[in-house]
Length: 118
Image 1: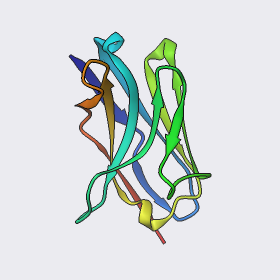
Image 2: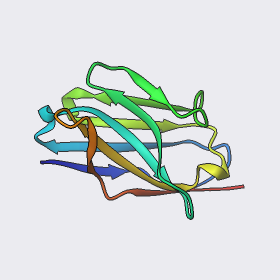
Image 3: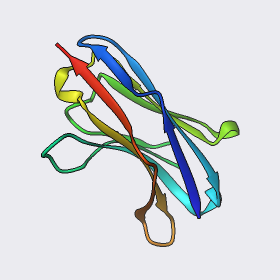
Image 4: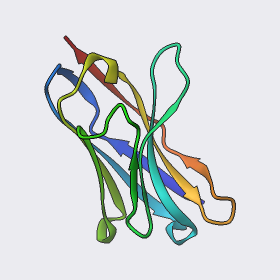
């Protein structure tokens, strides 16, 4: 099992920045990527950014150039730096870990709310 704990959400104004953190614990050797998902009210959950164990990253088109995913292996922590936030970024953000044996995001955190007002 892998446990994930998000932190860093909050309420900000458009144009502001926030940094989300995802601390992983447990059988972290069993995962090969960590991703940040978000879900806005009435919308499907979407993958915002992901980083693989090899360091490869990918981003949703809607956040490219504004969000940056990074990791600190020593702390087993992945970060999502969010700049130039827009009201449409408002959502609950979830950290998820992809299990190597299934290649699915099988482990999820509880989520952290990000609210961006105009």
